[in-house]
Length: 73
Image (cartoon, rainbow, N blue to C red):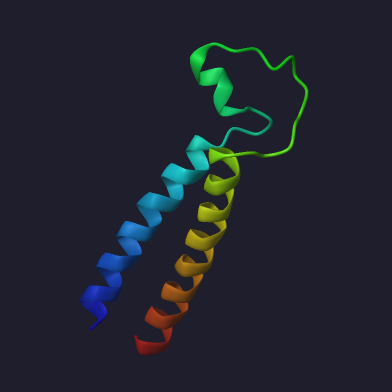
């Protein structure tokens, strides 16, 4: 059982790291194509909003997995 939890934790950690790296503070995904936002922070829209919620979900899942492993360990 703990082997499955360890594997799930590793996968969740990698996904969480990737989602955080994809989110630059104050940087929109438009800058990946060379667009200039002018340093103005705008509301999250589209894929940025989805990525934000995915990151929150992964963080919650990460904490739940850690607590489960600690309790079972």
